[in-house]
Amino acid sequence: MTAAGLPMVVPARDLPARVRIHEVGARDGLQNEKTVVPTEAKAEFIHRLADAGLTTIEATSFVHPKWVPQLADAERLFPLLDDLREVDLPVLVPNERGLDRALALGARRIAVFGSATESFAKANLNRTVDESLAMFEPVVARAKSGEGGEVHVRGYLSMCFGDPWEGPVPLAQVVRVCRALLDLGCDELSLGDTIGVATPGHVGQLLAALNEAGVPTSRIGVHFHDTYGQALANSFAALQHGVTTFDASAGGLGGCPYAKSATGNLATEDLVWMLHGLGIDTGVDLDRLTATSGWMASVLGRPSPSRTVRALSHKE
Amino acid sequence: MTAAGLPMVVPARDLPARVRIHEVGARDGLQNEKTVVPTEAKAEFIHRLADAGLTTIEATSFVHPKWVPQLADAERLFPLLDDLREVDLPVLVPNERGLDRALALGARRIAVFGSATESFAKANLNRTVDESLAMFEPVVARAKSGEGGEVHVRGYLSMCFGDPWEGPVPLAQVVRVCRALLDLGCDELSLGDTIGVATPGHVGQLLAALNEAGVPTSRIGVHFHDTYGQALANSFAALQHGVTTFDASAGGLGGCPYAKSATGNLATEDLVWMLHGLGIDTGVDLDRLTATSGWMASVLGRPSPSRTVRALSHKE
Image (cartoon, rainbow over all chains, first blue to last red; front, top):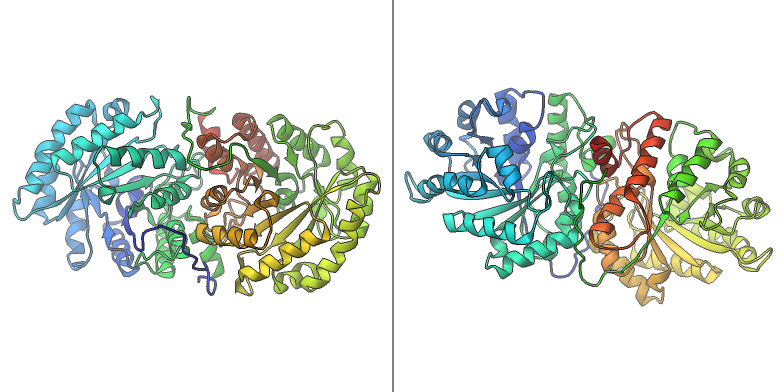
């Protein structure tokens, strides 16, 4: 249980009153876990996340099952979420075949997954950046055309700060791909620090450059990784620049605490602790969320890498 | 090895050009480790920290050996550091008996250890806050009186944000004890978030309150714990308020990654990654520091809880 009265609520100047957490644990998190989780447990996980107050829960991925065996059950999982009518349940869609599968199940939100660097586009999509944009074009066009009602489209962008092959990523390169994704018709972007190297000044500089290029901050989400422990400091910097959409993974799913390198997503609980301390509304019940992550850690058979989950579980 | 060109250096506005890291791994870190480290290994650790560019390295504690068996070898350790003439080597001194021991060995910097809350003063020192200040009075007075040359005195203050028994700690209470420690003659203060509950707005508010009460930021250090993952975000907030002294523990020593609750200090490496990314000079060679923490982790027989240490070690 949360210690009585803690965190103490002390707002800071010029921060948003409310933020939206885009919960990625069930998709981006589980995708990177070795233990394959049964479909029913995934459905229970997503229901518990919704019960904890999360309103945007990325549910699964319609990539080819060969590439992500952990999420090969998308067709069986998605119908189990039909009762979650108040919750947005975006799904990853790499191409038109994926879109067909998602639309057939009634998905109302999709996400495409691009790269800011040529090296990662090649490694992850086996395409150049421009070829991958060309691949997304009909996907986004069909999603927005209202075939069965208009679908909301998020454009993920990997390697927005550093790239393992190319090193630091020039701002102009990120800005160009962001603009291109918006021009295709994406409703929002998610800027990924895929290898976790960003620091707060870099975050501020990229957000300023995007603003100058006409990309409104209201359409930008940030997706930080905690590889070097920087994710929450970067989140605070993004908050100070007006960002109101934060990707995070319940319990820090996707980063194994026993791996030599913990490359996981920012833990939702650590983010919520900070936001609630700052008096920012998230709609999340931290105790319920922590209990959910503790339960999922037991399904996976190992402790959560989230510091908040470990600290609060210890207190119970 | 650090990835080439990373972190990318992107300064943020209005931050200090240089900060001093007060390295606490050899004292506060080891004190909380179960494995007793041989004196020679401690001496090697401190030498390696100095080689990595750290200039303020808290070396040991002159509390009664009964209370902290890990540091019972202070009399044997301190002379092994005689060659480190360019490095400040503060030592913890709880009372006059401890001061006698420290001065006999030629210590030039001492630290007293107070509490902002009555509950922790009682639990840790078996005294009220005012009784503990009375205990420090002759210690600080003798240190500053020039008995054998003037000695620099740091005043630690625990529970500056939250207390496990009392919950949120009122700002006025912290300000009062800070003022009292400065009035006793302390040269600098270290504000401890002992249970790791602080968030960035709270940090800013306490620093502002101290400033209003006439405590110059130049005399304030911050000592954050990563219990809820907040330490680096809080450090960034402190930087934005002009703080230039940061306590940190090499490799995150003091927080066991296998404990249910990792209540450790901020890892020096995670802090250095952020500071270097912000273009702030620390004097630290991150690769050397990481190698040192990796070596100490092997002495302790378990991996480092520092995310940066794990990420960089994995790359080697």
